[in-house]
Image (cartoon, rainbow, N blue to C red):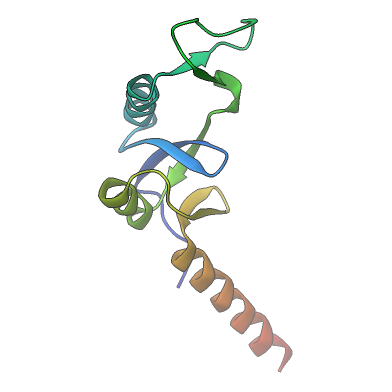
Length: 114
């Protein structure tokens, strides 16, 4: 397997995926809706504290945009954003895709040595 190809975008905070879409703007819209529905305030970097109506908050600078594989986008759509993922290069993908990529890379290295 070669490196996963980007089919869209995800917005993440740590290991959690809060939004996805075919464009980065769609992914951000989805993430902001998801966070608002969960009553998590997105706080700009200069703000001292979140709105009192929100029990939790996340700093805007801590939300990251990644290109994402089709398999990861499908997994998020089917199971939500609490899904295991890894970045391979600049593309976020499923653990299975990452494992296959690394296995192929190791096999190619072994062949070059052998």
